[in-house]
Image: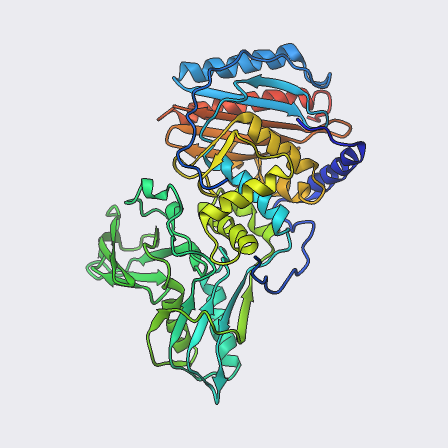
Length: 524
């Protein structure tokens, strides 16, 4: 681990003070307006992740602060390793004292593992380093307006993963308020990203229609998903079906309303049809029952926003004569715009909620902002590596293909994860915001139901990772006053069907470290 000058420890103390004082979901430290728009500025993709074949090493004794009992740490490491071996899996872990870099506990720290969604930590750190927490995305409507008519209205996206239906309605109303009465045609400029809207490794499950596998585009809406809301009517009549966003999905089939007390049974089958999506609905819902919501990803996201915008413009009183198309790259006159929340806020979708769509979109943004449009996943891999190597937080023991860690797309060692965690928290430019985007044990995000005994101290801040046979947890144990944080990473593989048991073992290990760090400091 690199050594840091004394002034960095002072910065760490200030950052920890800010982190502990900040309530969950609050604004980032730097929450200024940021740039209204970001102009385009002008290590290759991994070809097969390395095999995780290194043999586990013996547990290492604690060499850290006296507050961590070395014998207890060794016993907990041995217990964790035995638990995972008993489940037929492999485990690597490392825990260090952040201030000194001293190892507190370790087992196979240099072995290569699939980190699953722990890969989002690399994306988040690079985004904060390159873009800053105040960076905002811009989605704009462009065109030449003359006598209330726009010959071709261009919707241009810059990669905002957070654009929602309400935001698009606001753009439509703003255009109407600008005295536009007619639009001859609508074009959508998706050129900020390349045309490969399925991220690398997502092709491993092509028939998966769940929202977590949504494709990525420069202009997206509702994270490129469709929400079906089914409400019962009177028995024997068709149920009502609302679709959000409007305009893009063609509905076929019906859902009937059954007698009260009948168990609900709904089916939805999606079928790409040209530029749009056909949804075949079937089944029944009981009279007097609750509304049922189903969310599915779209197949081709490129025209989703354009079809929705066309319908919204017509609803607000703007006549749209023509169809929608891809294009409009040369149009530069901005008519109305929507700006996202600051990046520091958006990153909580990565660290707290483990949102794959946000991660992949921000990932490509890094390439577009630094290499110029179109942003590509391959360019993002290079940018993330270059950015984090400058912090000594990225080495040969990391291999990325996408920005989310979904599917079999990454390899990293526990040592690599901890190296990143230490570099991030010790960097005054990103430390507080990086920690703030992580889930808080017992409080929020994917750790809401874990570490509940630590919710009062809000001490455990970490990123989860889960795949069919992988479980991971990497983050920090924040200390009481006068002590140094712990950075830790636990990566487990080859445990299909045993994730719950693995999580319990990981949590027990992390809690044992927290108990040692907070010894004599917790109040009943």
